[in-house]
Length: 135
Image 1 (cartoon, one colour):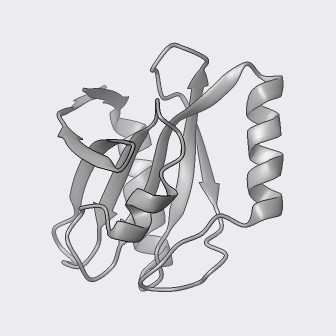
Image 2: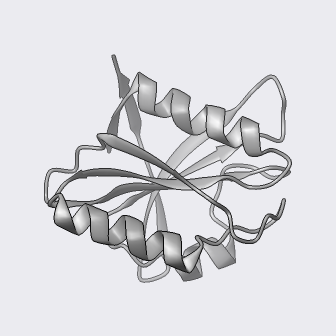
């Protein structure tokens, strides 16, 4: 189960809407081993694509080093889908390399109704999980 603060959900949704029609992406870091998402990090979609996202390699290196320096890890890795439901694509599954991360998808295909879902992806197996939003 993903337990996450309302303001972090709002930031992911705002980022997804701002980057629409391209996919948005980013990370929420938290203390190592805590499973607590705390620090929102919007990242650039190096592909600038409505159907695919990829972290810029230099930005990713910088962000992961910063997390290491702060004794953090990626608790949430998020991106948006602009024309499909909030479910991981085969490409998303193939790129899921953080076994402890929650993979959040935000679908902006409906302008008035954003779909927000979270998954665990381990060894190619996708498991949807409950999301609890706290104040």
